Length: 158
Length: 158
DNA sequence: GCAATGGTGTTATGAGATAACATCACGTCT
DNA sequence: AGACGTGATGTTATCTCATAACACCATTGC
Image 1: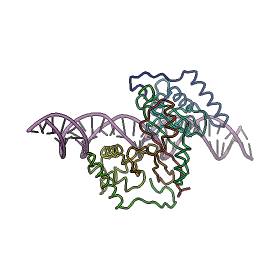
Image 2: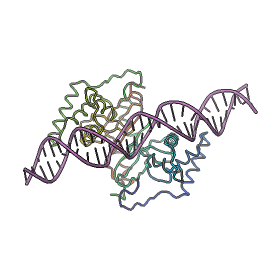
Image 3: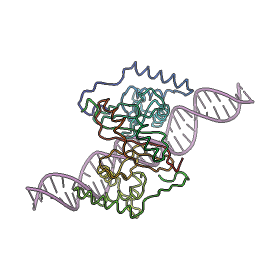
Image 4: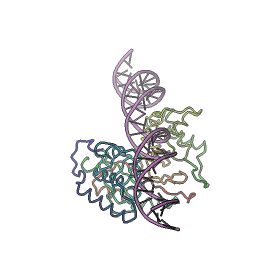
C-alpha cells in the first residue's frame, strides 16, 4: 500500500514502543470489560498498529506468522471482526483495507481522509450529526453506523 | 437483495415507463456530450433503474441477457465504470453493490441511507462541505471524491 | 486508404471474504 | 471433581467480487 509515489512522507509507522503501549492498553481495557484479548487478536492488532496505515486483509494473513508462515484467512478475518466490534480497528470499504483506530473514543463514527497517491490515511472525528443526521431524519431512517471515506491527496502528495 | 424481512415496503421498483424515460434522457444527454451510449451500457443502466435498489454486479451479469444468458463479467464492470464516471450510477462500497443515480445533478457527492433489513436505499445530496470539509482542510488534504454510506433501518423496517 | 482511438468479446486469474464443521479452552453450576 | 454451555480456534473448501491481458471491431480524422 505505501510508497506508490516518490514523494517524501514525514509520518512513518509508529515505533515499537508505541505499538507495545497501545497493545497493552487495549489488552487491559478489554480484559477489564470481560473480553478475551487472545493471541490471534493481539497479533492482528499489533500488525495494524505497526503498519500505521490501512492494510489489506491478505497482507495481514501473510504477515501473521512472523517467520513467513501465513495464517488461515478465517483467523485474521475473525480477529478483524472482533477488533472492529470493540472499536480498535476500522474497515475502509472503499479500498477493502483495515486500519487501527487512532481515535481514543469508543462508540464513535469514524471518518477517513485517504490519500490516493501514497495510501496515507487520517482518521477524523465523525462529523455525522450535522447534515447527514438531518437528511436521515427527514427520510425517516434510523442510522446505526456510518461510513465516511474521503479520497484525495495528502499534504505531502499534492 | 430485497425482501430479507417480512415487512411491507411501499416503494417498489419504478414502472417500465419511468425506466424508459430515464434511459432516453440519459442517452440524449450523453450523446450530446459526445459520449457513446452503447447497448451494453444502456442495458446495465436499464437493469439498475428497473431494480430501484442496489444490485450486486453478478446479479447484473446474470440478468444481462434477458433470456437467462449471463454476460461476461468485464462487460458489466466496464459499463458500470462508465455509468459511474458519467454520474448515472454509484458504487456502494460497504455492500459491494451498484445503484442508479437518482439525483439529477452531475458532479455531486452522493450520500446513501441504506436499510440493513430490506436493502432499500435513499440517495441524499451530499452534506460534505460542512464538518468534513473543515476537517480535511485542517489536515491539509485536498479531497476529490467522498463516500458516505449510513446504515440503519428504513421507515418501513423499524 | 489507413492510422488512431475507444469499445467489445473472450479467456483466465487474482483478490476479498465466508460457510461449515470439528475441536479446544474456560467459566460455572451442582 | 464432573458435566455443561459458551465462545474461540483450526481446517477445508468454496463463494463472491473484480480485473489483467489480448484479439478484434467500429468510428473518426487525416
